[in-house]
Length: 322
Image (tube, rainbow, N blue to C red; front, side, top):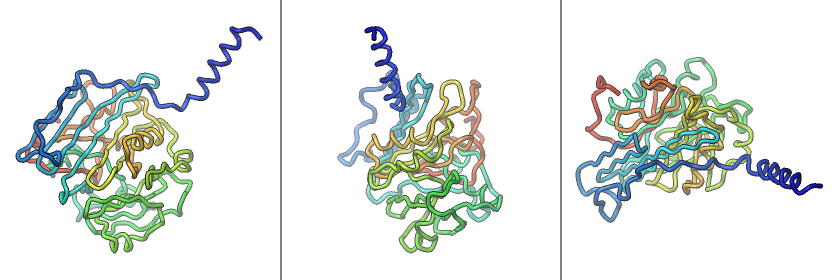
């Protein structure tokens, strides 16, 4: 066998072995050396608020006496992908991420564009949630769904269902803790008894106790699409992640894409939320992600809920340009 042929075969073998490797990232240009103003020993401001919005460089920051957020837009060329990594720190005793509804009393009927919902509630940072309302309205199984201590749905699938989403659950507790469960692992009443205030039903769960859900990653969500996920390193330290998809600059990916990145960030917990046209990330009332190839970006679809964190009176009015 010729040396040239051996080299060609070796190259093909390497390409096969590393075909699933993460794409080479492009670090945002002009990333400032010092991001936040002077912070106290706990990592927050002593008073006031700090807001930085730099879409050209792909950097957004927020700080207050109880909250610190840093969002970085990252990209890769082969395949073309653009995603957002939002790292969140909440001061001890302050509220962590919570589900925010357009109208909990009329939950089955009321929806709103995410950027408007954020502005109406003064929410600093938000991502799309589980879109459970649509499944309830259609009479389909929506999973175990709880909003602000109110049970909205209990019909779910058995564990490891062949359906996507499989209706696994993300439980959010009043002390800022988060836990993930199989679809039928707990009843709605059990979640409430344990102190859960919100339960989202979508899935699958991506990481539990620091371990990837390998079985689910192989089974679900292989299509290339927009993706959204939430992760927790520990109570008070969270990640929101959003991957653009089905546009020129970002083709999207399967659920493994964000799962692996959450694990790299040190998350001990990870959960897949609704993607596609629901997928969104909104900071200070402005949607960061692109939904199409046009210069003027479209909003993600209306939804009954968002998953948000923080409160500020600095957000623009609902009627202001977004």
